[in-house]
Image 1 (spheres, rainbow, N blue to C red):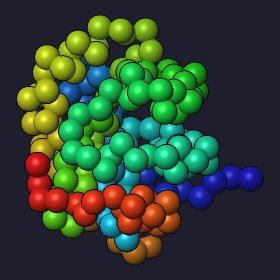
Image 2: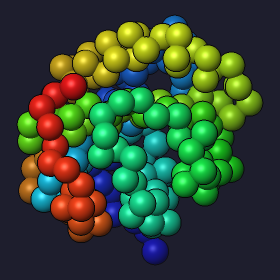
Image 3: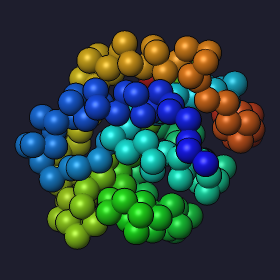
Image 4: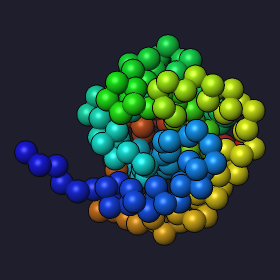
Length: 177
């Protein structure tokens, strides 16, 4: 059965174009942006829509509690995310998953980065270049605003009840950090 085209598929070439300067200047080869609201609705734009399909189909989103706190996360160093990272590595050749979580009053933004599975030095790069990655994240929000708005239209917005439950069990989303 063929899969129906999603906003992630439609936007992928534009997301890649926005990310190309980062990809050309660094060893980063993967990027995603997710926006999650307290009501369990979300949107996702990324350079690998098939990975996002896998992420949902395999239920990895059901245990995505780490993002309830703003900060930076090296998912490959977190045992709870070993299966997710192994799947990303084996199916898509991407490893060293690194997320930046930014909380706003109404939602949170997740910015994810990854690199070739054989590039172990990227981890040091992430931590030594946090300002660059945070700056790119802000740049992405600005340049991709029309894509994000399209992804947030009711017909494109995702509803993931597990996210709503995770928010209900956590403290409220605080102001931007």
